[in-house]
Image 1 (cartoon, rainbow, N blue to C red):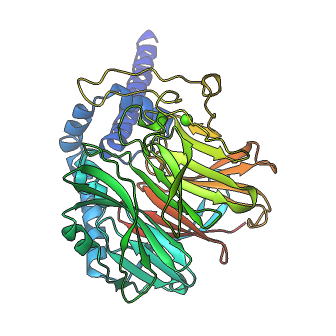
Image 2 (cartoon, rainbow, N blue to C red):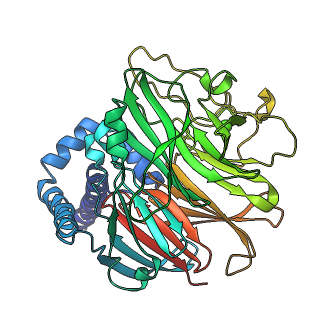
Image 3 (cartoon, rainbow, N blue to C red):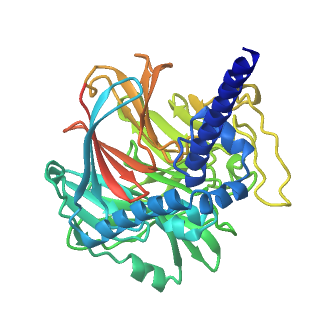
Length: 460
Ligand SMILES: [Ca+2]
C-alpha cells in the first residue's frame, strides 16, 4: 500500500513539474519570439527574471524551428506585399472583439512601404524612417512613408478587395539635397484648408532638427516648402522628437515638439523642446501653448470645448494623456523632466539615475488625466463625442505601439473622469497612426509591422 501511495505521489509530483516546464517553455517561446502581450503581468514577470541575452540564445537554439517558422511567416507576408505592388490587397477580414466584448469589423490592406523591424533594436536609425502616417482628405486617403514617399487611394475602395494605391510625386528628396540634409524620418501628415503639412526630422551640419513643410494639396504633385522652422538642434539621434500637427482656432495649427533628450529644455521658456506650440497659418509665427512635455506623439483638438488633448511617452512607465482646457492665458506645465509616474532607466554608463517626483500637483504641475504603467507606447489619440458615437457615449480612442492595442476609454458626460476602460488587442502589431472618418464612422489605422492599413468600424 505504502509503495502504491508513493508511486501515485511521485506521479503527481512529476506531472506538476512537467506542467511547470511546459508553462515556462510556452511562456519562454512567447518571450524570446517577441510575440507576447507586453501588458500581460505574468509575461512581464517572466521577462524580468530571464535576461535578454539568454532569451535570445534560447530563441536561436531550443526554439530554432518555431523561430524559423515565425521568420518564414514574416518573410512570406513581405514577399506577398512586395509582389502586389501598389494594389493595396486585402489580407485580413474578420470580426474582432474588444476585452469587453464590443464587436468591430476589421480589415487589413497592404501598404507598400518597409516594415519596422524591432530586431534591429531601438538605436537603429533605419527604423526612424519606418513610421508612416495617413490623412483623410474628403473622398481620398493620403499616406506618407517614413522615407517621404506619398501615395493615395479612393476612400470607397476599402469596401473592395484592393485599395488601388497611386503614387503622388513630391520634392522632398530635392529639398533635402539642396539643403544638404539627411532625412531622419517623417513625424506626421496633416491636411488643412487646401494644404498638406508634414513634420520632418532631419540631420544637417547643425545637428538633428524637426521642422514643418507645407504643400498645396494636388494629386499630380506635392511641392513642399518650409513653413515652420524650430531653429533648435540636438546632437544625437533619439526617439523623443514628438512632431504631431493638429487643427486649432484663430487661423492657427498646433505642433508638438519632444524634449529630444535635452535635460531641462522642457522646463525652459527659451526652448521649444518639450512644448506644444501654435503656428499662424499665414505668418508662420508661433506661440508656446503648453510646456513640460516629454515626447508628445498624439494630439487632438476639441473645438467646441477649446480643449487640447495630448499623449506622451513616459520613461519606463508613466505614459500620459493630458488635458488642456485653456480657460485662462497661462501656459500649463505638464511636469517633464521633473515629475513623472514612470521611472528613469539609465541609457548610458555615465547616465546617473534621476528620481522623478510622482505627484504633479504638489510641485505646481498639471496632473495627467490618465497615465499608463507599464508603458503602452502611447501614440495617436482621438476624442469621439456622444453625438458621434453609436452608443451616445463619450470616448477616447488611444493607439499604442508596445501595447499592440487601441484603448477605449469611456468618459463621464462632463469628461471629468474615465468610467470604463476597454481594449482592442491586435497581436504582433504596433499602431503608429489613427484617424477617424466621422462620415462613415470608420477608423483608419497604420500598423507598422507589415506595414498595413487597418479599417476598424464599431458594430454597436
Ligand atoms: Ca506629466
